[in-house]
Amino acid sequence: MYNGLMNGMKILIVDDESRMRKLLHDYLEASGVQILEAADGQAGLDIFLGVKGIDLVILDVMMPKMDGWQVCREIRKVSNVPVIMLTARGEERDELKGFDLGVDEYISKPFSPRILAARIEALIRRSKGQKNTQAMLLGDLSVDREGRKVTAAGVPVELSFKEYELLNFLIDNRGVALSREKILNQVWDYDYYGDTRTIDTHIKKLRQKIGVCGAYIETVRNIGYKFEVPA
Image (cartoon, rainbow, N blue to C red; front, side, top):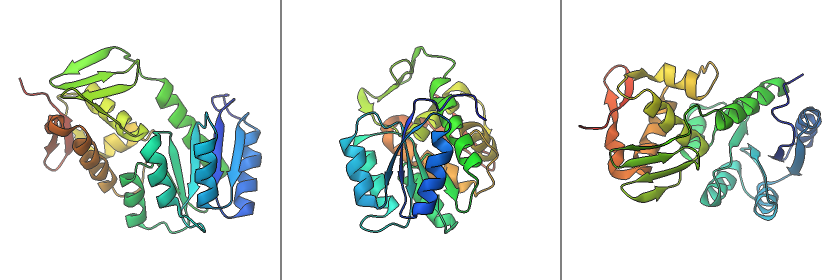
């Protein structure tokens, strides 16, 4: 069915719909995944904080006790583990809010479990597939790909999985004006049919996190963005 990339992973599913949890549990378990489940946001957060080695979290938005946004916000305080958000709403403002909180993927219900599995594998491939693992110094920005560490003007920076990938894609194409569509298709690793303002949200957050080095990410009018370190 799949190429084994998910084998051995530990995934936490947090969704108040028992049928959805069972569907995802059965499908992902067949790919060699160890599944943890929670029926509400608070229980999901407790499991995440109490269990070591969780590789990925799948979160529903609307849940009792604590919604998916709150859970994601709490997770991001302590971890950059990849987070996939599920929602039945499909509203653009929800999607942008999720990305702003550090969500790595966003899938609207109903969806095929095969699509979810493909998104998970795409996240794994990107996390393991950095071509250049050398530490780089670009102006005041240091990126250690071997250790997956970023330092801006001597200050360590905590980036989400998606923010880190976005930064590396911009760096790998430094000096090149990249359209929003190209960034979406390359960094998200699939054809994205949503609003390209998703990229603007990520760029804004990334610039804030890397402080003075945020100026290296230039806005190219009517196109997108370019990474350029001043001479």
